[in-house]
Image 1 (cartoon, rainbow, N blue to C red):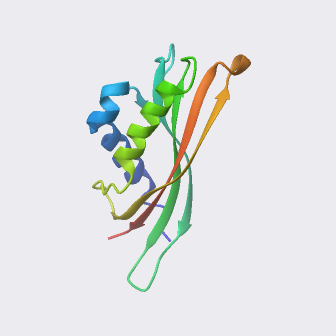
Image 2 (tube, one colour; image 1 turned 90 degrees about the horizontal axis):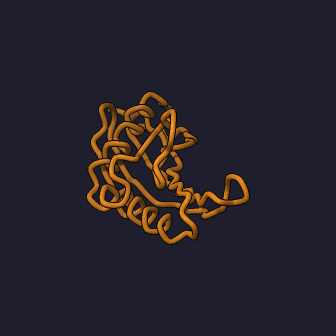
Length: 137
């Protein structure tokens, strides 16, 4: 197994979302892997948690990465959050971004969960779960 591609995958996902016209039209550059200090935008995308499993075979090292991308907004209702989540899903489903180490074999959307969070449920959050199969080279 190799966890060595995790950083490369995170950087590629981040760059892929920043460059996507659909995502960019809705959130601009409000895409984070760590939330900035101070006030947050009204709607933003955050790259979140990750679970990795060995998928090595006789051909070489590989890993399956399951990771979360969250859409967060303080807008009332889920409409805006769902529009952004749809754009994120479109951008990443089936994507084959270039990695600084390894290569993407497959990229799939798995599931999503929309929920209210924050004080008195005022924040809307949609967590999208993706699966990426990587091979080290």
